[in-house]
Amino acid sequence: MDDELKRLLEQGRAAFAQKDYQRALTLFSEVIKLSGSFADVHNMLGMIFHRQGNYPAARNAFKRSLEINPDFAEPAMNLMVTLNDMGVPQEERRQEFDRLGVAVPQRGALDDFLKSKLANMYYDIGRIWDSVDKYDQAVDEYKRALKLKPEYHDIRLALAGAYRKMDQVRDAIAECHAILTRKASYVAARNLLGLCFHIQGEEDKAIAEWGKVITEDPDNRLAKVYLASVDSTSTKDDLDDVT
Image 1 (spheres, rainbow, N blue to C red):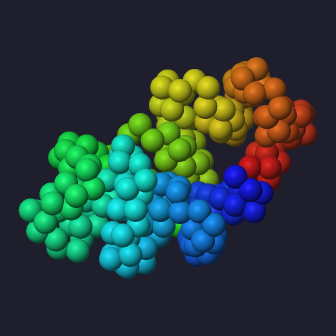
Image 2 (image 1 turned 180 degrees about the horizontal axis):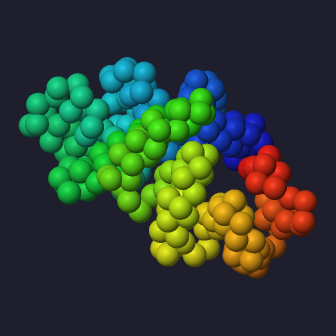
């Protein structure tokens, strides 16, 4: 792989992960000019086209992804959703998958896939409310997402963060514990738990949590800042300033 193609791929994938879809579209279009052999690029292009309401382009992109890698489950799910959104009859959908040599997604797998998509959609809406300090609305959206996908720890962490900003610290602590019970190595949740303990004046517990973070991740900057800030003059606002 030449350096220019590698650069475009890395930047395009980063832009897509950051939800900068227009930039991702531009970069991936350049990638395809150099090489059309990346199944994930065609899948991401299809997702962008689908978001734009350009279902025919999305359909073609997902098909191209599956032509490159027939075992790639995500574009198969995306293609099924797109065909459904286009109103394509069931028999025609089956024929399309047959032509691609790809199994039609089973109902259970498709339902789970749709739940994931909806959960992420509610999460994105919650983040928008969160960014403008509308925490009640953000909490509602995060809860909707978690009702569909309770195992999505990043969404639960966002819920805990919203509770903390609403001064509902006990609720924030409960959500952090729920995460750490399932994933003890999730340092972002442990950092937030330490902050919540600090807000409640439970300094020993706060220090213990941040110490666990340092044990797990010795270079964790936030935990180091928190620990350095906990002295006789530190306040809740002091630590809020570094979150």
